[in-house]
Image (cartoon, rainbow, N blue to C red; front, side):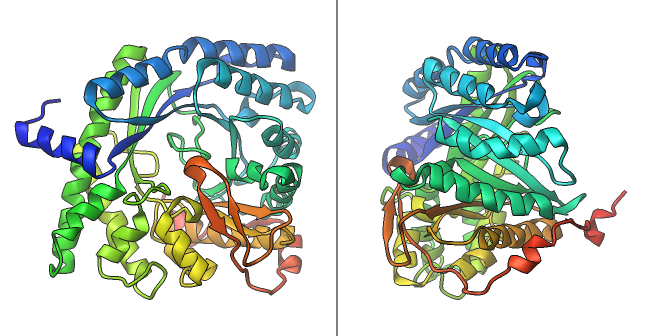
Length: 451
């Protein structure tokens, strides 16, 4: 890959003044060769593989960052869904502990893949696995978990939806002394993807290679900066500007991914161009939408603006790399975006509006803090709504919701670091318990019949 002088100067300005960063280098590891009859041996082999394959991940990431002058914020590992590699007698917790120990030894930020894929049905082994998620997250620091509950091809597994509402509540209770932080490490999906480098939802799908590098690049501030020069322009010009900016951002990710893959002796997986905000000023997806012409995020027009942004980002990324993947688009995590936090505090940004916006963004309801006394059935119903949006529209949707024990509507909670802080958002007072208790599987929609 080659860059001309103007591209180099532009990229330097983006890095120095516009909050462009490489959000993560994620090494994706297959663990199928770690399967043993004895859960302790499986855990040991998992630990050994992670610590050997990813031993130099942090060092290489830091070196590349210094060489390019581009901050690489996080170094992470994702692994094969642990429910797939299994453990006799349902003893999965030793594997979670092994993952956490390995992550600490190699110095990475998080490790994803304490996960299950139950979109169509749940085996007895997977039932046992789901039961372990709250304790696994509460007893580890770096382990992240995800569960895929639905897909366009399979429909929605409502038994799993009900279970995960209960497990989220349990995880919140087990970490009540730390703002129910375990829930920030747990995501439920519809149409989850195999090559997502972003936490907490990263896992390594079965079709992936033994070891590949996936890179996530983020630059909301870069897009906002570009749009400031477009005041008075029409929507087509706005979309074109976002597309060209996304192209430039993705080129940086491509360079980092190729370099890291070569130095770590891994395959090159994908570049994920997801505009992922942080609590820093000037690093906000909401601010991009306001720069497009909204007085405030959450106002009428927010869904349309987000749709334009998401589509243009994807088009620009695909132009820049033949291996764009993951989620690629725009994230809308409330606690991680300073402008979204402000709008949520004022009541301009509501759960209902966020749900509408998830129909056109990269993922879904993300880092939403709600009252600690929220019923498990209500959480399950929120999950079911997001799954329905994903299944019908053949897109990835997700829920990362935190029922913070001891907090009520109007309170605020701080999660620290990149996770930010958030107001406790109000929910609809209706009770969906009867609907959730029915269980069963929502049939796949007619759009799934494409063979």
